[in-house]
Image 1 (tube, rainbow, N blue to C red):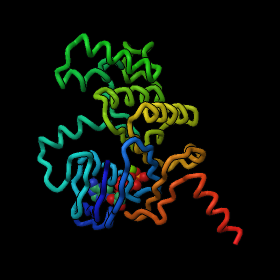
Image 2 (cartoon, rainbow, N blue to C red; image 1 turned 30 degrees about the vertical axis):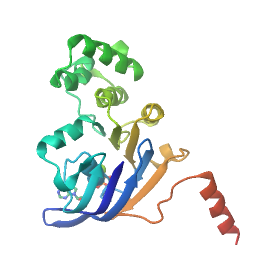
Image 3 (cartoon, rainbow, N blue to C red; image 1 turned 135 degrees about the vertical axis):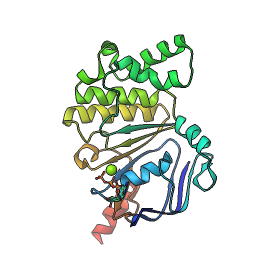
Length: 236
Ligand SMILES: Nc1ncnc2c1ncn2[C@@H]1O[C@H](COP(=O)(O)OP(=O)(O)OP(=O)(O)O)[C@@H](O)[C@H]1O
Ligand SMILES: [Mg+2]
């Protein structure tokens, strides 16, 4: 579980990137973080992988609390979280295979295991045929699929995707969303920030709307029941 309790983030002299956020994300959920530019989406996501710590309040991620986590524990936490960015952050002069293998090599896994796992992951994102290709030569959609394979390499309990389709066309965006949906169906939580309303409009996932460093009430969780209640309210 991920929990935010009265979390505020100030960047240097700029106050209020996040203001008094209270939020709970359950294991196994697919959560959409929606809001205009500058509303605090990336800041909220960075708190989860503890790239930044709150100025006040507490973020709890699984068994780790921002309140008393050591730098060494932050590294352990990050091994359990897969992060996907808008600009992919691949190593451009390395092959597709090596990009996905790198986190496993750093962890000191055995060669045989790495080869088997990387091929499996690349197959999963439909990029196995390109394993020898240099990352710089891939299309943007292909790059994001490789980045997702890399994020999955250490079998994280959650994938954090910060505008993963921000640089992609419609078809590649759909492709990336379905990949994340498949990952979610296999039991990994997914938290995705986006301002592509069109892409997510028919998805049944929890939506958290942000504006100005705050979460907009109500937390408009989609469910057929809620929708029915809203409909009834509209009729009155
Ligand atoms: N490193 C930083 N230093 C100073 N201010 C920052 C920093 N990062 C973000 N901010 C400010 O914090 C606020 C929230 O930024 P954040 O990047 O979280 O928004 P966002 O919702 O992710 O926006 P976008 O959709 O453009 O990615 C903004 O006002 C931004 O200018
Ligand atoms: Mg952002």
